[in-house]
Image (cartoon, rainbow, N blue to C red; front, top):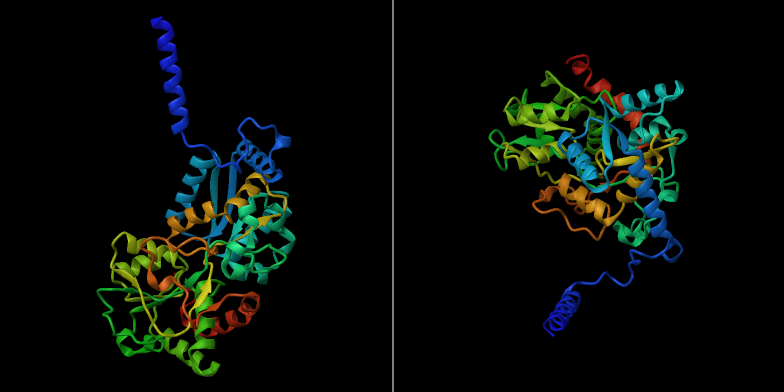
Length: 385
């Protein structure tokens, strides 16, 4: 009798525990459901995951980048998917593509994803070595255009979809040393040629495409009434400069250590990391329009990728709410999705504001014209380390 009673009590306890355990959403397929009973997208997604894990690797070619962010992405992918992320770092977008093209001519396919910004893609004609992203998407969340800013797909070249974006924030904001530049001392971009700042301004090497060139074009088009006045401004600025580099981390360190008071033409990822670590570095607020762009977070899927399943996994993750929320938290930047709030502690100057303008294909196609001009205006700097 006691044994029977114990069994009854045990059954009651098990039933109670089951009643208290949360159930999965009804829309989710049963773990035991046969493939033909699951939604097609779920079956496709599970196959992508399985195949990507079997490949075990994803390679991303990028220009410079932020080492801390790269490491964070690699750890996330290793923990989440069991896939190693390898970064192939080049000095510039042009250098990255030149290397990829050399390898491909030799029958070597090393990169799955290219992340170099929008301008090199259009200027260097990368369509032959890239594939459209849209056909790779199987997750409904990644394909739902209503979730993205302005209800548009996150492709600069829509509907072709070879140029996809992660982030969209104000870029190339001047970076200052807060011990050397006091609040209110600089009211406008025009003030950078004030004799007070001679020898204290450093500009990212602008002999190649990149954020330094974008900032140059932005100033000529939005700060001065005509091109001649703008170019005179830059030539005056160049007179007070002695050194430059393409290394954004080096530029930021120079400002943080007080070698320079102001750095121009930088990507925002590394300066933001320095701020989070407590360095005496900040972004400078000026009233002029800013360029809204993706930094290095524009990306492209390569044709004949060495790890096609991992590439497809990246495409879906990189546009999903989960993936972009993680990217936002890791980078401290806004995403291209409208259903993800700004990351906690995000710098207020990063947010888009009235008067700002978005990067587009026209800007990229004008790059070579401006590259020639900037090389002339900053000629004294080129050739230095």
